[in-house]
Length: 120
Image (cartoon, rainbow, N blue to C red; front, side, top):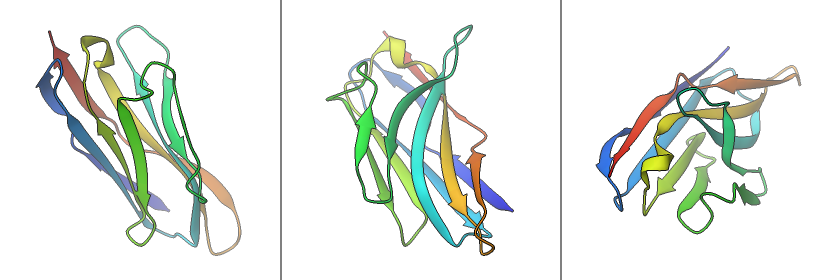
């Protein structure tokens, strides 16, 4: 089993910054893709940013140029640096990690979510 622990959410004024972290632990042989998704009230969950094991990244158009995803493979941790935050970035942010265990099985795990609120 794998556990994901997220941190870094909170309340910030528009134009401010936050840094989210998601640390994976447990039965991990390797991690391939890591990503951040968000879900605003009464909206569907959407991809914010993702990073592969080779550190290729992709971003939703709404956050390009403002958010940066990165990973620390030694710590099994993915980060999301969010700058120039806007009220429309308000949502619960979830990390997703694709883990291969020692038996070779690949499984996706989701974090519990961390709330980000941006005030205008």
